[in-house]
Length: 141
Image (cartoon, rainbow, N blue to C red; front, side, top):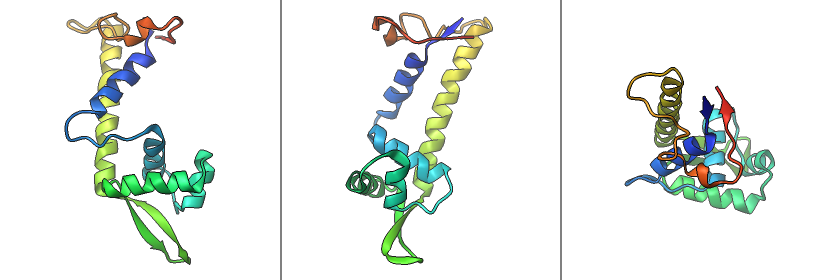
């Protein structure tokens, strides 16, 4: 059985755009995940270096994430001119939701690979937009 990662990516991305969801860019998502999953401190300078971005781009992403309540900015006790980006409960909840959605997709693919009744293949034309791609990437299971 082949696993179509593009199909899983598309499904997760579509689910993330549902009603009441925060519409994040890839940059914002990467920074959010860094703040919530990697040890800090998370300064604009450190985040810019980590992601190969300019400090203004990171600042704009932090503005959006902060306005959505997904991170918070606090003064850096070691440097009053700097601020730290810290995780929030709302950001952790969004990441938990994203993680659960990914787990559901992986579980569906695994059940299909094992031949569970009622399961559908993640690589079927009905669920995989990547079938329109000339050379889809798939992983053998």
